[in-house]
Amino acid sequence: MSSQQASILPATSYSGLYDYFRSVFRDDLPLLKIVFIGVSAWLLLAFISTYFIPDTAGSSAQNSTQYLDYVIRNGQFYLAFVLAIIPIKLLKISKQTPKGQSALPVFRDKYQSWYAGPKKEIFGIPAFFIMAMAVFAIYLFAYSTIKTRIPEIIPYKWDDLFMNMDRVIFMGKDPWQYFAFLYEYPNIIRAMDFIYDFWAVLLVSTWFFALRFGGQDKARRYQFVIALLLTWFIGGNILAIFLSSGGPVYYEALTGLPSTYSDQMVILSTINAQTPLRAFEYQQLLWNIYESPSVGLGGISAMPSMHCASSFLLFLMFGRTVLTRLILGAFFMLILISSFVLAWHYAVDGLFVLPVTYGCWKLAGWMVRKFG
Image (cartoon, rainbow, N blue to C red):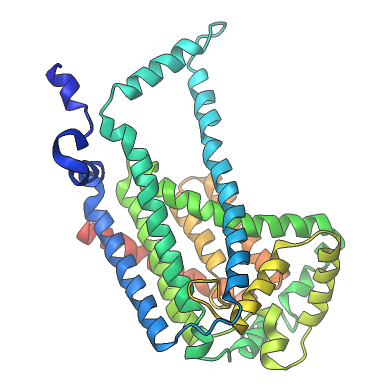
């Protein structure tokens, strides 16, 4: 065996599995340590919360089944999204083929060049995938475990204020009323519902993309990852506790006060009767969890909106050209409008999160420069 061949063998052949994976992550370890420490501390806080506020689930098995169905459905979308990368890459390679010639030799040369490279690069993809998914699952578990305990820490009491803030901003009306004409086109509502749900797939895909395939700008990639963690912890847990609210869909049930949201829910219920809306299913699931909370599942919290926060982070991360800023700006606006058209949020939930998210983005950039 030549020295060159020996140099490309997996590290497991001479220094053990630990050294091999260490070699895979070596270049990223300084920044990954920030992620690992942050997620570990978050998980510890989640376990502490379960100690002081024990699980009181009465129907957690049923809730867990519904939640698992949600995860599987979005997991299928995510896999389809990832697999779509393959034909896109093949199409890109085929464009390098001279006109009138077969693209197979180009594919073969690319494959041989890739396989002949360091095996660390080949096996690094699944290693990063496993690591990324494990960390993502832990952070969501920690986030949801604390989130389900929000009403036990501070009962929902801000809904009336946020509703009135919306009415001040929108000149005496609830924001959904300005978009009431959309309900006359159920297909538009279903499309908004689908995109609002598909947001979860984009979130997971971008997380993995930023950790592994985001180009050479490693500092910016990890700035996004750390900013996402900071935003969900500071906004989704800390601020959500102090600004405890349920959102329009639960307004009357939580406050006992009348509102126009009942009219909105009747309209959405009519559309849902024709073709089920994912929002209706998840809203019922979250209410079931609220009535019998369980560890690491869902939880009701309107202020601030994590859908809007994550969408704005995508704008900050990828909005580097006029075109991408227009596309991602439009996507953020669609998520913001959908959040109150589907009765998930007050408009102020999405507006309030903008400075919070931007602050977390800047803080993450400082952390990367300081410790990375």
